[in-house]
Amino acid sequence: MSGTGTHQLSISINGRHENFDVEPRSTLAELLREQAGLTGTKIGCEQGSCGACTILFDGEQVRSCLMFAVQAADSEVWTIEGLASPPPENQTSPTPLAGLPELAEAFKRNHALQCGFCTPGQLMTATALLSS
Image (cartoon, rainbow, N blue to C red; front, top):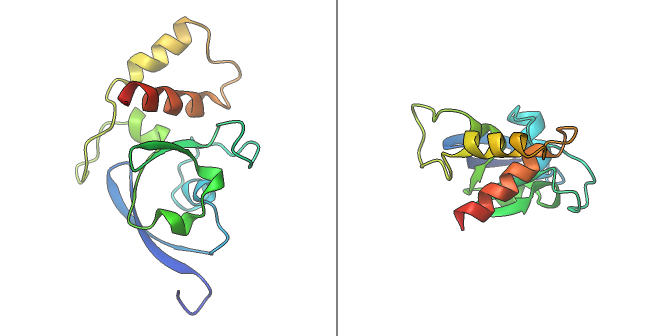
């Protein structure tokens, strides 16, 4: 813990190692959106029910609104942005599922997009299902 009441942590996000200073009460969803700028992870109910904040955490789907950011120290996190983008040059690990464009197209073709707010969480859940 640093002198300002924040914790320093390192996380692999979408294949890139990132360092953050976070308050102990910050959720992983807040860190992803506010500090990492990855706004595809949505914050809906803040109770883990809606699934809009679903990410892959060390290969498992989790609701990032239910995790403190400090719990993600030295872990691997994948968000919708990481699955939708080409891998960065300094990527340290393989993308869990390269077929996201096809999955998103299947959602579109079958009218599974609704308003779009929860679509990233649905795609992350489907990705976890297809990866298992």
